[in-house]
Length: 496
Image (cartoon, rainbow, N blue to C red):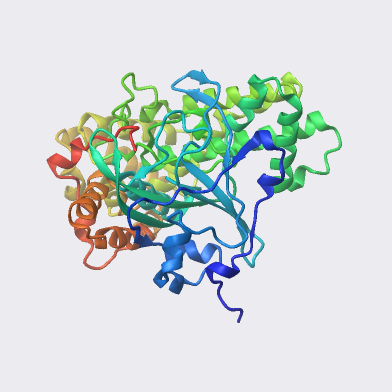
């Protein structure tokens, strides 16, 4: 058996840094002015790069991921990009407080970017201080692993390094750095910046790089225009499937700007986010989103809007018609995948014509009765389809019991139509309907313990819990409870 790696043997590379200078700025992290300390370390993420979890005991880990030491072989850069923010094009954004240290390949050949968030000012800071605060790093650290546990493509996070350095937001907070991992941090906005600058050669070089690194099966396509169009089509499909997964699990991304959209179709940039508690399709998780642009039920249309921005940026490389054809696949792909996910959540093995209306009608009565989204679907697995079953525990979710009874009668007939067996169905449903999600109040509890008491145990407890959200975990029942009243009013904004 091969030995696990130490910090010194991670074998860094940085293929992105071999692109020409306009794509990035070379810059080193800025160490904290106050003594840094380890807040939490994620062994599951460490395994992705074959890193020995015992490295978390070394002071050098805090040094490497707290900005005072450069990991051997790293080549730190801040990446350039632009993007549409709340529908308005901003000509230059970029990594204003995050630094790509480099990339590490594990022994399976998988490549992971190591991206240090909160690492200090760069040329793209736009008058910002280059820092992140402990509050926001905890939220991203926990949610990226929660999403992974749910089977949703996402960045990961290796560790949080905290400090006593004062950072000014709405109030004075303490600074922290998050070591984020992803196969790539290239965004829709990375393409947009070169399109709007009319630097088409840089645009082509970027597309060639991304295809070579992440879509190598397209390298054989001789015609360049066709190759770029096929690349875009795959981005469309990945994005559609990702947003369908967000919708099915009841999760909202609060800042779906084009600079926060991954070219690989993974969940990127956890600023404001939220899992729905009481089902509300108009749920807005970002306190700064005053017009509800990124409301939960608008995510599918915003995904299409963002992809159309990317298509425009690719116009110098590909013909318009193939790009449009690829864009036209978005809605049917998302709908097909979402419908399949919802059929699984309802325990169906087959697809039938009335399934969509059965799902829609259920969501409508859930909205009218303010039914907890996660808990109801988990409980629905216990539905009994016998003719005399009243399913009282499920009826208790609804003030309007008659509305549920009418829906339940249709659901019972649908289950009988495919010969569904209750116990087998419940087992299937428990594998797709999570018991635990990172509700805002759970994250807030962990944040308050960390920031007010310097107690990080709740972070590690939630990290373990959310790694297996479908399992019945002993002594963890309280984490599946609906939020208390205060927990329904946790305010999350873009400030981090």
